[in-house]
Length: 339
Image 1 (cartoon, rainbow, N blue to C red):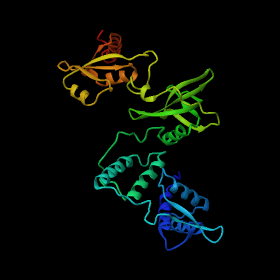
Image 2 (image 1 turned 45 degrees about the vertical axis):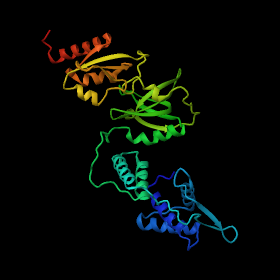
Image 3 (image 1 turned 120 degrees about the vertical axis):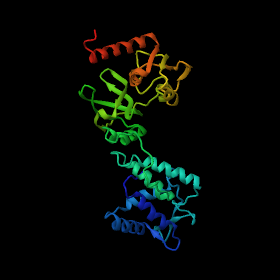
Image 4 (image 1 turned 180 degrees about the horizontal axis):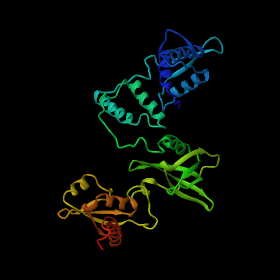
């Protein structure tokens, strides 16, 4: 799929040529038309090869599914047009309601314009705007919690592409303790949590392979590597994350268990409107107690500390004690003479 910023302009020019049944457009004519427009607007030019690639893309059923035909003319020459005189890649039969929904979608997608590595998104948005004649509202109506300055975002689209293409990569990774090392990863899945992105896959080690979870903000750089891809035949990521909060699947808690939390009156409605985990259920509304069926991990612990004095861990006993110990340790830092 062409990804440069001139692609949609080329499609627009070609669409007009293919729709014009009063002229015959041979490949050189198409090239002349497109390069004329590109020269005027962008000061650039393309080759015959690019025109042929554009035609193939427009004909692809997953793109425009355009009925482009090559009509023989005087021997080996041929000219190009649509087999359906009424076809255009910019035709749309959207209702008013559908147009409004599409405008909202463009508005949301546009929030991610300009983020390094998201050039592909620019083409998707422009494609929607031009093809359906829909522009986002000029007012800034929607904001997201995405941190545009987060390190590693520039790798996101390329890593997604590597996962789709089953392309192993060599990663220069900086650990939490700032130690850098090279490793080969077979990318399977990308997941976002708490405004951070994580790459999951199979990592090659001296002792074989192991499942890995790499934070994108700790990836220094990566490149494609020419080794056979090891396919994912073990992990269903919907099931893999079913029993955890966040992205860490704890090895020391292989089975989920019931975690009971008691909230104060002010915080309880917030917890009901924004559950901590899909398994959340209210077991005592009067006393503001909920139950989670999860494998406790560091993300759950962080959530508990986020609520501070507004929450109390009731069960399991070991988790209650673990939280209590950390609260006591923190207390000593603020009140060192309290002992």
